[in-house]
Length: 87
Image (cartoon, rainbow, N blue to C red; front, side, top):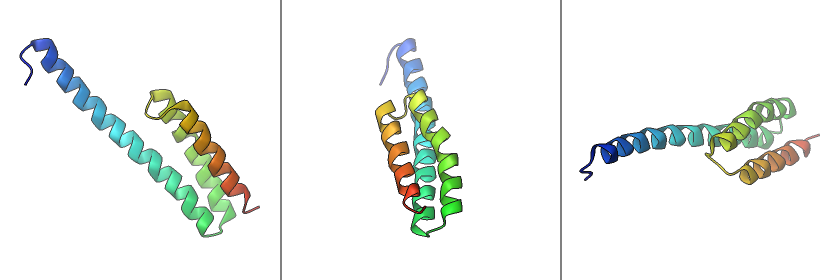
């Protein structure tokens, strides 16, 4: 356990950040899953709408450092390619 005041503060800050990051990552995965489900149901309009909603969430996660920028680019690219298979 931490003995210094600054170390105790760091523990609190880390716990807050961990919770925030966990929420952001969970939200990100949900948006990605919605796109994949829409594609699986062969609904092109829903898939494009889900993709349009997912891209800002993915980019935001990369900006915040939740995921790496290359990971974000890869996800956007693969999801776009997946949605375009319906067209």
